[in-house]
Image 1 (tube, rainbow, N blue to C red):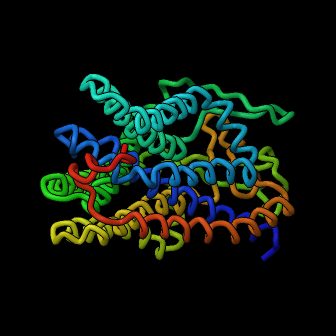
Image 2 (tube, rainbow, N blue to C red; image 1 turned 180 degrees about the vertical axis):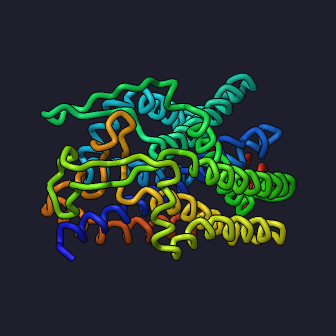
Length: 377
């Protein structure tokens, strides 16, 4: 395989890894925030839940930064098109995340119930909204985004903010939120005790079953959505110019890769098996197994999306032939090569220090421990 083509495929796979890291690690924290009022019915219980993720939430944001940086460097055309066309959505995402650290840092500065309730709701919003936006973005990728290019490669977005939150996109957003609630519940089970742990177990079961139902409905729905097929002109080793190919749109075309390579059906099967195993593990109290099963479920869901869309990355509903793909939206050979070198070095380092942080700061967190810890949130 030609080096340039191999690098494009490798970075397509690495983009999936980064999205998976973001979904699992950041989604876990956001799931805890979104369900804070359910996990904790008193101020002490909520403080305990917050302090379960307090040592990790800011470090987990590195996956968000890595994902954005990877798209910027490896797929600059996608980065420019998405951030210019979806500017309002990006602002909603960023503003909802900006208030997140304020909720952690300021919540316990005053003992006023109103003050603490305000920041509790802030943590709810900053947990639920980003996950819904994340899922809705994936849904819109399947449907196609309304953009096109001029002859000078200037992109024009022809949609609106409201159309991005169409019924299918909302379903995908709810699926992402359900998986985040599952992952957050597994975390609270792992570090919680007593009634808080039991609430987390019940929510994990409900969120897991909801995710399975939404994933199944979405799968049938995709069959009726127009899928994209390259019919000519795309050169895997060609330059980053998405104007030289022709693309057709057919209902059910997103299943073409599965029809051509039946082994790919193992990817969505992974999501079903992982959630089933996770729920069974939670019922036995094996919270760590449930957590890793949640990561497997995320891998199955995101992998199903990637396998269906390959080689498309950002289809265009306005002009399908100008859709952005793995073959015509990547950076140069030099950029992809140097990025790969640094990725091979730093991703293992991130994995090691993240694992070390979780190991050192393991253990049960209770309201009593939080009350007696002057460094607790």
